[in-house]
Image (cartoon, rainbow, N blue to C red):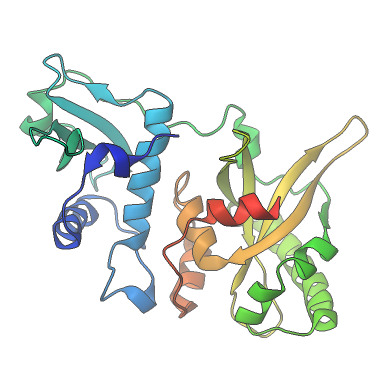
Length: 284
């Protein structure tokens, strides 16, 4: 994948926040940060979304360059409240020794800043060749790799308030039953995530779903792979992640539904500025 931090000068944190503030006001309303960091980092999810969208579009060669070579643009994948495409515009930098481009800002498809340089709207990022992989199939069985989930992720359970492995085992069984019932009624609870192994180059779609431990707020999400064999097809729960990571990184593909928004309203923990990707690479 590309790397926006190596290609584009984004300005100071204050400058970035002003541009992301304008973008957040321009696009259709949704959650763009976490309650705990709202005052200090009001656009954490939005920033992560734009960075990873750039990286994916660069990998797909979908970032357009103007005829004079002075500008580049990308489709953010976001829409205005009137369903206009929102475009990120970059200008060639004239500073010696600096990054080759800098972020001008975000514009509607009809804005002159964009139409004066480009005659076509840049394409959207694509993360999947088979749309069926993006949608949870409730007819398939869900199995849990419990030893891996519990033993290799005990620190995540402890951070969520659970330290006893036997108790965690029982809670996982209960959460699995609740999740399966919910997914049969709302398949959109399982959010698609684009998995890219930076070491092997492997790409695939995984699904992330909330774990409902009885009597407690949701703090963890289950990572599921669709397993295909000659004899069978099923989902396998392979690891767990903090719901903050799950929400932020699944947002690359789809806008989470209302139940996820309610879950995020209840989350009151502080997470590090870290990609889910690094975590999953270790889990696989």
